[in-house]
Image 1 (tube, one colour):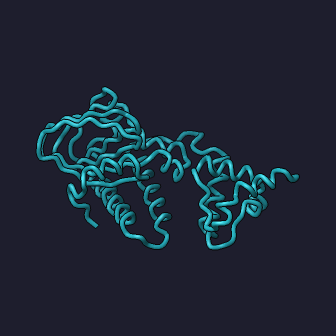
Image 2 (cartoon, rainbow, N blue to C red; image 1 turned 180 degrees about the vertical axis):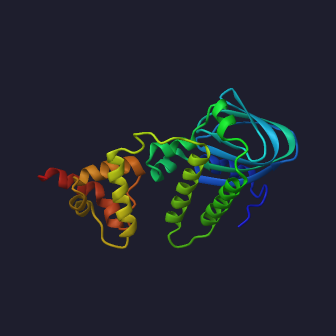
Image 3 (cartoon, rainbow, N blue to C red; image 1 turned 90 degrees about the vertical axis):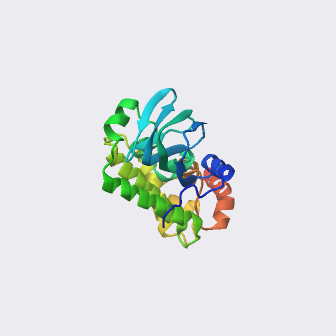
Length: 252
């Protein structure tokens, strides 16, 4: 799938970059206009053509073809175009959404604004093959959001994780010793189990027995890390809190 240039209604586009879990666009400016933005999503720009100066929280970033600029959520940014036409792909994603997919704190760093010095060192003139691969993944992700297919949510989350990993390597981040906590790891194990056994009857008590955790702990921590309980069973989703409360009253 190819993403067409300026193929959106502008008011809908600005609503989407603020309200949707993620949004993908391809934009080209043919006039040297100036733009001021601030939104509650992280924004990743892949520059195709032209050049521009971005000022993020007052710091200057000069972008050219094959540069990738990341603007963290709620950071004011100003853009002044230097060379026309100025064309780029844009990928915005809500912090609550990517944190529900990516538990590893190291990987989450790719969605934050780099310092101007780090940007010059690691975000500019990205390898052509890597740059093209990222665009291909964005095209695939956009297609998944527009056509309803089985397991669409799983595919979307997988692609976003792949994008984060590729950006982590491209930006030359280094792994820290505390990338993922033991609690995060257990919740990830539970989520992977649910993803595989989603067609089965699942409940908090059964998961507690399997993973040696109190049902209320699963309910609290899973919601903390993933922002929801993604069970396939409506009964569990509606009554999960009640089950946890009843289980809490009994001995464990």
